[in-house]
Length: 368
Ligand code: SF4
Ligand code: SF4
Ligand code: FES
Image (tube, rainbow, N blue to C red; front, side, top):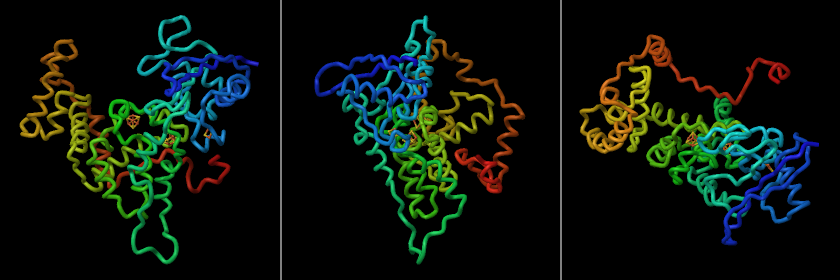
């Protein structure tokens, strides 16, 4: 039977003592879950280990923790998988066993509470203080259209397929734990709540699509506060892909309702596309003025002036030269331009819901 070192992060904010690592040797098959190992330690060695769990079937969403640096469900993560993960922390890659760095040794599984939420005790975080507060922020219920039909609302199949992915969320908070934007801006509405918002924006029975989108576009901590880091997609144990739902909200807001938010998020996105179409590679120096309507636009001037200290630091550190700052010799290739033309030439926007696999005319056995 393999042996694992379960290294649990212990912390009791009431005690006034600092957090510490608590190591336990656990003998269990590698196919057992990290939660099995934590519960074994709690039942057989130390009953004071704090962990929240219920279903043990990846359904209730209560056992979210970080395992060797990566957030997920403890009941849905095998010990061998967690031990092999050997993540580094933050942006630092894992090192090998003999190297310096943050990686943990073979057979060691570090279990920590999720990030971006205050710790109540050991592995239990305060979901009410962050996660549920943000869910409440997005009006997490359907506001039905009037008049109410005599019988049920009929929803087209394709609309339900479109929202299936966001409906799969079990509110575990793993995406919130690793959201980089939330780390910088704790007021960011965040991946789970925005995925929830798309669940109603994509539902034709809801009467307030535009109001919801306007609200989340105008909020400076709303849909344009996401930096596309992909962490939430990586973290989600249910394939909800919150970042994709946020991008859908942006497309609905900008393209369908033409909402030009005061945070300049929509124009910034357009400037980004224009920049790549023209240059093939991003030319950062043009991005800011383009986002404000061009270098000569009066709205761009104060923004350009405020960015001068950043440019000066970049020049001083050799990250850019006066030539790269002012000129950009790279031009987009024909292939890049063709890609943009093909997308622009489409009559309708096609949203790919990668969560639903298979085709309608396939038999069940073909789809399985
Ligand atoms: S992609 Fe956006 S929402 Fe998702 S974790 Fe990164 S910043 Fe947060
Ligand atoms: S989107 Fe995924 S990771 Fe985020 S709360 Fe829902 S199930 Fe958990
Ligand atoms: S205990 Fe319910 S999801 Fe893990």
